[in-house]
Length: 145
Image 1 (cartoon, one colour):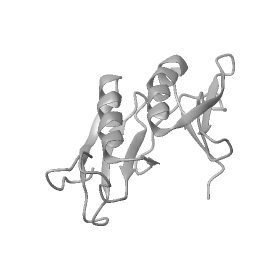
Image 2: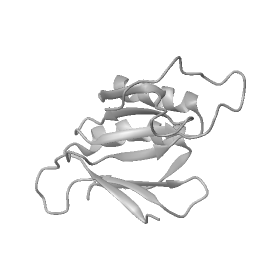
Image 3: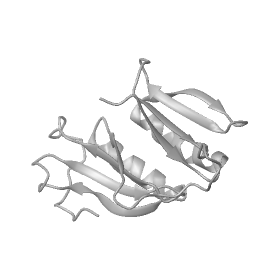
């Protein structure tokens, strides 16, 4: 459905440091990084699209986060949702909804929400029931943000 998603940043080095480990957990690999432009992009491990891109806005104006805009990444399992949320908060992100089930979306929707250091709203979610007995089970539903 998507070719790419571009997220603006006001501090390219900070954004690369923030998103690189998140993309690794999600199984995406760095396709390019050009600090001179500055911009960087990740793609699915097997190549192709969609791409996730970060960089300074093309018009030269400061990047601003939008109210009502959100990017949601599909995580391979619930434990990855937990790990990414914790990593985001430890790396300068701000919690916008802790990991947990949100049955008002559907019975197995497990997600977490955070703001990156530039204020962009990010979601990481998993849609399947736990496949293995050792996979994290949420204790209950939490409100979305």
